[in-house]
Length: 597
Image 1: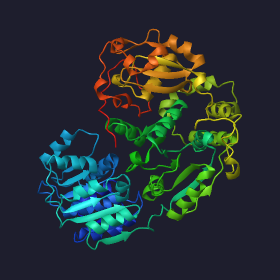
Image 2: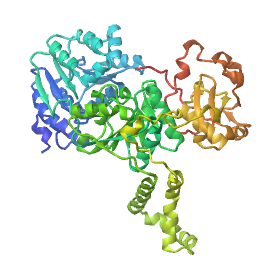
Image 3: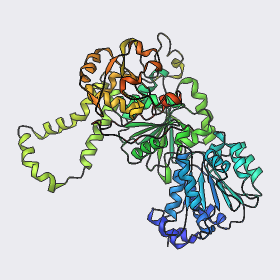
Image 4: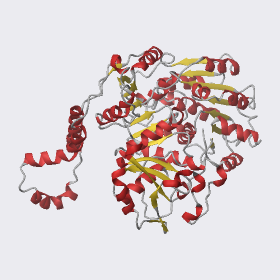
């Protein structure tokens, strides 16, 4: 018998969650579900991310609600649209064997008319972000007078994001006799105040020690000079060939810059931040879940609620401003009982913050050494060897080609074949790391690291003087993101992404910087280029750089669509750095208007 049945979950729901792979309740589920099934008291549950909190409150809701009534009976508030969609999908999956269960996701960045239409059709469970929920309440489009249960999921993060006033306003529209269930990974004073203000003698449950991290996560830190941070980061990634990770940055700009730099350097990476439209976010997350992305570069807010299986590493390119956020970041790995590694790149000045985090999570960090070039090459070589050994051989299909293959290798010994095959991958890293410097730095010498020449986080000095700024008459209204534009330029000019510098995407045109020695190659590559039947022109930026007023919609043969939206449209699609597309001229679906968090 499935253990969930013994907790009091009905047979139809148990069958649904069994099909999803739920075989044994997690500690939070095992202890919370029986308490919540009574439906008689408020509840506070403290547990780390990745411990199964959605099922801990979702399964009891499916037992307690009356699905013969098509009116709102439960409201789940969560901080981000990603988490909102995840909870909604989970509840729909849990209830797939039940009749007349209606769950609606209410979040910003999506068409509010569609959400209102779903609400009017009838709904029992509303899963919402606070901002959009307030908007719908303000339109008097929903009646919460029959709500029996309110769930505050990731309550600490909602408060960190400044949603306290919104939560107060939303809860004021619900009945006093409702039951409030609060789930959080940490218990700061603000969360304690919410529990005091909106709950009566709540049942409290703590799984693990308050504010501590997952015991299955190893925490490492590397001391680096600020100008070596990106190089050290790449070396750590290369030293872990099977990495499937999330990289956290402090700002949207840093997130975008790191993602674009990785794409240029040949990594499968993309960015996730608050300036992306919902369509762009969905596209990025789809690629990440399908593992066509190896690295997801994200801000704290954007990555909140991401639940992706088998994330091996979390890398803190920048430490979070709030220490509590470290717990949420590291919780993206080692989910559902698996193990993971949380890596932090720090300067000597940030060692004090590492010690603070250690006290909060109750675990000690290990100081690690940045691998040298030889170590990286060796690791990559044997990763290739292991991949070759583990590959599944389709004898039926490859058998027909074996005679020709054997003929091609007839003058090779066994050792020659192995050496040539291994060198396919090994040579690339050997060339790159042949004269790689030692990036390790002691805390004592780090303070002198920036003397004698300023460099940015990518180690570039004299950057502007080595590049030429060019103009191209394509922009965001042609459905380009900066990642798309990078691929388009490289494909037409047949150059490496490393030769491209900053890409400044506008509404109907784009400025981009290229290394001086490839300017002629780009000009030649675009001599006869066209896009959707329209001639594409690349020119020296010159006085075109004076500002948007010189964009001249007549150049592109179409009117500018960004004139009425100020600077927002010029940045609209700047966030999506990944994935080179097919630029054969086929029209692509128009992206939705961007919404900020």
